[in-house]
Image (cartoon, rainbow over all chains, first blue to last red; front, side, top):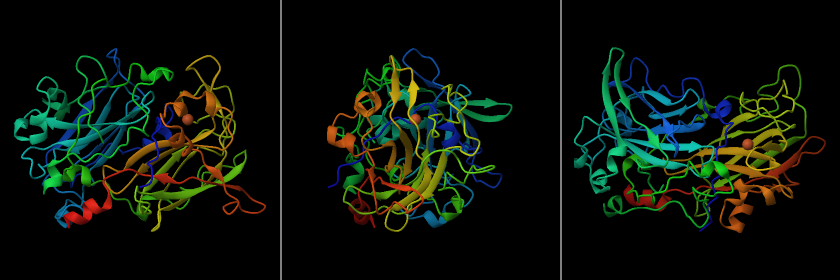
Amino acid sequence: MRPQSPSQTVGPFFAFALVREGGNVLVNEKTQGEHILLRGQVLDGDAQPVDDALVEIWQADAQGRFRHPADPNYALADPHFRGFGRSGTASGGFWFRTIKPGPVPPSPVPCIAVRVFARGMLIHAVSRIYFSDHDNLQDPLFASLDPERRGTLVAERQLTPAGVVYHWDIRLQGPRETVFFDL
Amino acid sequence: MSHHESPSRVLDWSVQPPYLYSPYVATVRRAPHHPLVPLPASLLERTGPVYGEGDIGPLDHDLTKNAAKNGEPLGERIIVTGRVLDESGRGVPGVLVEIWQANAAGRYIHKNDQHDAPLDPNFVGAGRTLTDDQGYYRFITIKPGAYPWRNHHNAWRPAHIHFSLIGRNFSERLVTQMYFPGDPLLKYDPIYQGIPNIKARERLISSFDLETTRPEWALGYRFDIVLAGYDRTYFEEDH
Ligand SMILES: [Fe+2]
């Protein structure tokens, strides 16, 4: 086995290279599924917004399929949806225009994979977003989490004149620290 | 399948830096305190974005040309190349490798960089490429300058190039920095020193490479990267 290369912080000055115009818009008018705005803040231990974080999301299409060869149904995946998005937080928070993914078997509820990077983080943190309008206890991983903490993974659905918005904050530390996974 | 339910560890925490490393002051209010939760490998983490040549422009790998307006950027032109390997030592093809850096004077184009050093009208300092069938990548750029930061009194970052790698699935993801051999600032840099294992730190130092060096034109540096992730046998079992 080769020893893995260590991580280093993304630093404060990545946006000009990594945060591209449209990188947080995962959909076009042909993308199938319920179009949503997913937004929130990255908060530090003083509950202050982190304005130099980078948030990445990865998710299935509306049918729970991925455009990736590890998915046996990848040929059927929505050609108008890649499923990967990146957002900075320079404006105070992150946001993505995406769709609510379909559930990925064997889980009966949808979720989105998330990675966050920031100045002051020598290595990324991985989390997941579940949705407030689903019975997330049906998901074995969600159900296995500390009942006091698993709510930190749930994005709140809001109906606004502009459409469906899900709000989800990432709390890096503090009393409501987000659940982070070892990946 | 049983391995879907059992946690599949990817990161080696004897090699990876911790969240909290107080000499790097910004970690103190940003480090998660709870232990990380093991994550069983579901299809969500065993898939990821797939990139192809259509995602890369012809000059994206050449930072001396991709932002040139009326000439060449100032500074020492260098070639940076290497191989992305998995932990079994196999080359990883199709990895999206993105880099960004300060210019030769130690100044970033980013609007929040207030270091009193000149911008270069012919240099932005961002590039991207895909690894080839054998896992090799190659960039042409300018050797970045050291720059000051406010972590502690007289704090200077050693010269470095930031690297971001997106591999074959969500588990294969690394953001790191490449350093240069013999840099006296490494000893004082809490970002570099935050890596717990001395041998692991040294793997982030590129090596001067005469084979890569092009006569009459540019010095070459070699920087290999080992990308952790769910290993290939894991995928083969599944198919
Ligand atoms: Fe930097």
